Length: 162
Image (cartoon, rainbow, N blue to C red; front, top):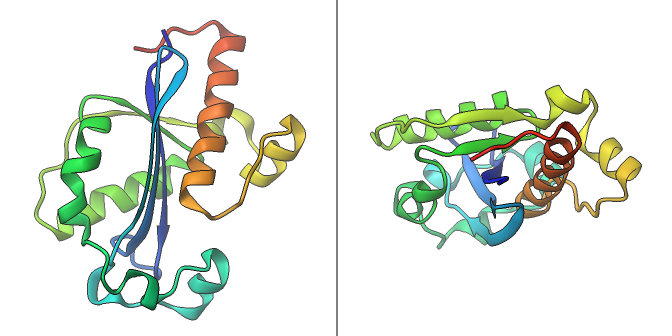
C-alpha cells in the first residue's frame, strides 16, 4: 500500500530553476517500478564551478540534453496528484516550482514528504547507518536512497500511503 515518487534534483548554479539532473524513483505498493535518470540542459547551459565540483555534471554533458520543458511530460505523471518524497523537500520542491514557473508550466497539485525531517540527519550519514548504497549528489542514487529510507519509515510506522 506504499505508493509514492522519490525525487532529487541537481542544479547547475544557485538559481533553483537550473536543474541539470533529475532522479526519480516510482514506488507502487512498496515495490520500485520505475527509475528515471535524466540529464537536463539548464537555462543558457550555465554552470558554476562549485556546483560542478559537487555533482560532476558539466556543461558539455548537458549541451545537447533536452530542456526541462521537453522532459516534463515524462515525469509529470509521477508528480501530479502524487505523494512526493525527497531528502530536504524544501530544496527539491523549490527547484520544481521555480523551474515550472520559468517554463510557464502550471504547477500541479501533489503532497510532499521529507526524509530529512523524519530522520533529522544528512542523507550520507543515514545511508551509512542503514547500509543503503549511495553515490551522493547523483540524482538517481539520492532519489533511490530517499525511497528506501521512506519505505523503511512507512513500514516501521505502519502508515498506509496511496
